Image (cartoon, rainbow, N blue to C red; front, side):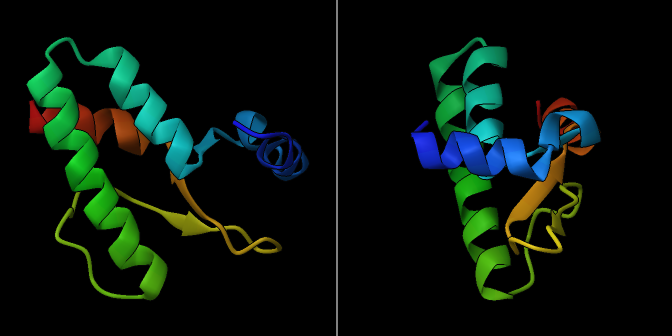
Length: 90
């Protein structure tokens, strides 16, 4: 993570709000999944979902909830939603 991303994340106060950026979700998937095939599959599905959400298209991932930050307009994911999504996809 670069310095700009770290500062932006700190300004948004994401840790206190229980929210994750797309990079945080990818890191979470990478550390919490055991098999490499599962990691690649879920990260690929997440990347597709995140790209669709960013451009305003409907997503195929129904269990993955997101919200947009009021000021920065970043797409953020509640940690509880990501954890439930990972649990239901395995």
